[in-house]
Image 1: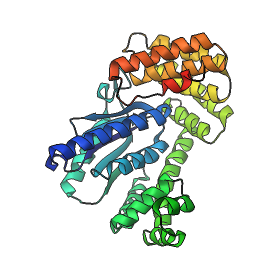
Image 2: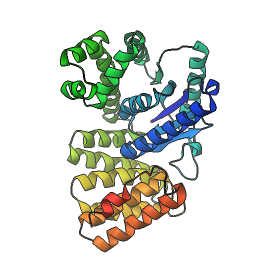
Image 3: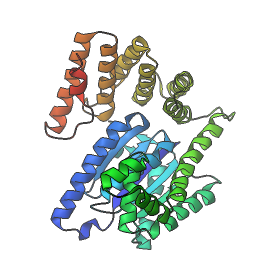
Image 4: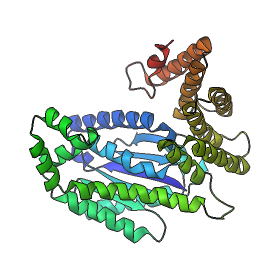
Length: 361
């Protein structure tokens, strides 16, 4: 079960050329940030297509709500977006797996159809979102999405600004008060007027449902369990600090995927990278290094500049650095930096901060 995100910028064709350019630059920047910060949860990173549309695929569905809120907040000053989320199956994995244009399947088709339905509604709401779970809980999920819309529909621009800042500042009222030069009492009044606690509860409930749904499926006796189920569990266990369980779950995902795709299939690279991230957190650096070498070997026949390969190189360099293999780490990280700079240009926003790790040597 994959989590597909399809979105587009509302009324982008009616923008001036300058505004459209600003929107494109803003989208590119936030996608680069999201693709870097949430790399271990993404099978395929966010990409802008046709100037105003974007797509991505996650193997950790519960992260989708945090990600899309990041995107909405970044883009809101220049444009509104409509977004469709679908949990479902994919069936085409072409060259360069981490590129959304190489992936197809029922989940993508449904997400695109849902975007078209949203367009027909001709809504002017700043939050236009559909979430398709493909199961019996759909009416409840729809109700929560409706509640989100109702709560935020009457927000003033000032209330929205306060809510966004409050969340960006990790719910620190004092810091918001100082940053915005208003009293703590004024912050509280704005949040209360926006019915913020109910708004926040809606988002957290959606994420919690996705986690619980994944847990129920993982505990089923279905012998045809998809590798994405234990992989999503591994990511969640990593997030909450249960690294022993995270490693076990990731290894189970690797076992299932290996049985389905074989020992040397590109599909395994994403799982190996997630497991490598977990092993680094567990300070099992030698095992991580070995796994990441394997991941690079699997990706040898694919473009070196794709996000998955760059992620592997970055993690490998980090493992070598932590093992004290300074020359190996320097060589690995320099190679990764050179690949990305050659592919994206010196001045572009890069996926990883190669120089930060290199500076530690």
